[in-house]
Length: 319
Image (tube, rainbow, N blue to C red; front, side):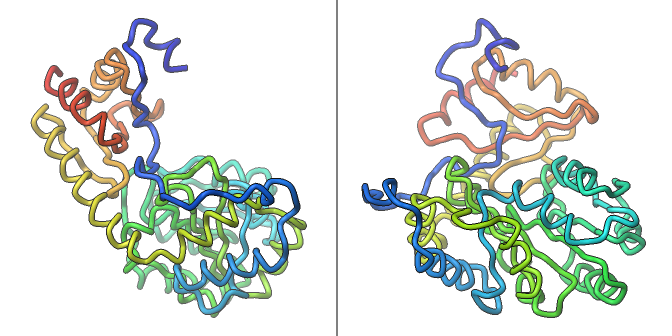
């Protein structure tokens, strides 16, 4: 698609259209036998234990792993009888609306948090993609209590929470009525590994696991993720590095006269009447960003790899 839009752009392309960490986790070599045999149940148990520790879940029984959170969305939506509305705090990641529609819900996309309390299925992406909006822990827990009391479900997608762990509500899932999603690939820079987690009451996670079936997580993913989730030193150092990278990107955008209005330390969000012009300008320099057809003044810019900073800063300098 990028080449079709910008046929004369220089190569290689710099893809800043995602919010994926450009500094991938440096895992040890994957043993050859991992590719040659089905994953052992004991490997999955080790992964659940590592995830419970890393995400501060009540126990491994509160964790279910799947081949990416996108696969988990329609399964989770299907746990609630589709007799009403799925309310999604928007604008946000479009797959939540698609999954709820597939499950038979009438979908309400709203920017009013109060609307979520009227639904059977409520969805909050926290921090939000693409705006970076944070809903307070108190507001989320209050909504979870409302949903629990009426037999509904609140889904909190914490795909970008690894960079700001203090805001996570994983510890509250034991009360029920709440499922938290965590994505492995974004923070660890390995989206192609396809791994994500649903964290909730064991009575719910076992139903999700049944729908996924056996061997939902590949052997290579088990090997890499068990290492990465247990590597607290790398996690701390990476949060510091990403924060510095985000500040550097803010400075480069500011020098070009572009205001950053939100985001996380994995991506920055722009709201500017010149957003389409910036998308075009960067594209002509072989740098792809994420635009939004329904919001032409918005643009999301991810972090470049170390070798690509000079090229990005030079392109911004010419805007």
